[in-house]
Length: 475
Image (tube, rainbow, N blue to C red):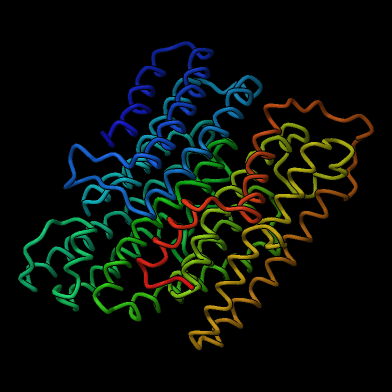
């Protein structure tokens, strides 16, 4: 019974809304543990769905599911301690929304029907909006409305794209289920004109939710206003769910022999996102918004690698996994920094090793990882994407890609070194207390990323290869 994996957090969320705050925190962590154990079980026995026309396991879905489950468990441990110190009003709404968010994201990963996927991705918008509005300030309200409106417009375009793909079935006289797996098998018979139109609308729609430029404008505001655990989920997991919709549609395009058309769109918008991130990171004044623009950059990298195909597609999937681990760690760390300095501004942060030594280690290691230093996974993924670009003859795009990464590295380095070693006006001779539950989840995420670069389980490697092969990628 595959569907139970998203029903359990849904039921837990309904219970949390009526429980005291302390019980809600316990149930949050307990659900995270149960969900992780169930995900491991799904990877092991690959259960059948009760409704196979709507839900099914795929290589990309399995990868997204394990990332979601691991991240949610570690973030829930952090959140339980975070909530004790932050004094969030109506805490049960926050924890309940997190569990609903987990339920809808899980539903995305196992959705096979094209309309069920659309419903699940739209549901992630509705369940995550209360997380952004947690602090109930005017800026939080503005960020929430911007998030809901922009993403809803994008999702509406994805709906139109889904309808156009069904029209490609009718024009091509294809009688098959409206599922990604069935459409991929029958892709050669689909009408190419309507299929191209459908991909464009789906790409723009889900690309809006993914944070690709120029549809990215909701993302920095939403991340800057949401509490750090919510930001970690938004950046580390939500963006992957939107990518999954694009990934599965691109798989149909590749199977139909239209990979060059969809690949070019992915590469162009990927480069636009990287360039947009480079422009804003260099002069960014708030470290949480800086991390948000870094997410835009990484989504651009993933889109660019997916569009290249070949070895670049394998590199894109590596970047997807490692970005989730690393960026979630950085957003959790940003919450620690804010609790120590009570400011989101970069120029208000300094002498981090003296004030918060444990947090500094997580923050600086996260910076090295997200900047693409070896041996972290993003270095390997980006290197494979560059190799793939040169193999495919995209020399100009490869040059723009590498130059943009250099600008982003320079901007990140400048800001991170200011925060780590710069001077601050107040006395920082005494370290700020750092509780273990607010630090070790970040360490666990970074160590997982590092461990996967040294040793990767064969089942994980085969699943990544299967996902890349679905787009015509691989070595």
